Image (cartoon, rainbow, N blue to C red):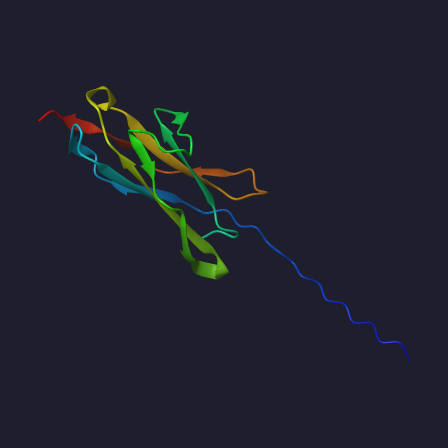
Length: 124
């Protein structure tokens, strides 16, 4: 008698349904502003990207932009919620700049964009 046992593992990728961007937009020139990008639950965890005035911010630190660590936490339906902070040290020239973050899951073409945050700076 021959008994054949087969195990099949199925992995389903699910993009986040939304991305939220929060943080202060009213600030004084030279005073740090912390923005927080949070994706809704996805599988696998989403990758986040930051944009300033439609230009992608490279993942290296600069004098005006400091990236926090990417953090994941359990989400709904066995997914993962992804979040990251961006600390902005604004100069006068950055008044009116707009920030957006996006979330993307590897293997899925869909990119989800957050709400935008526009800096409203005051000089001290």
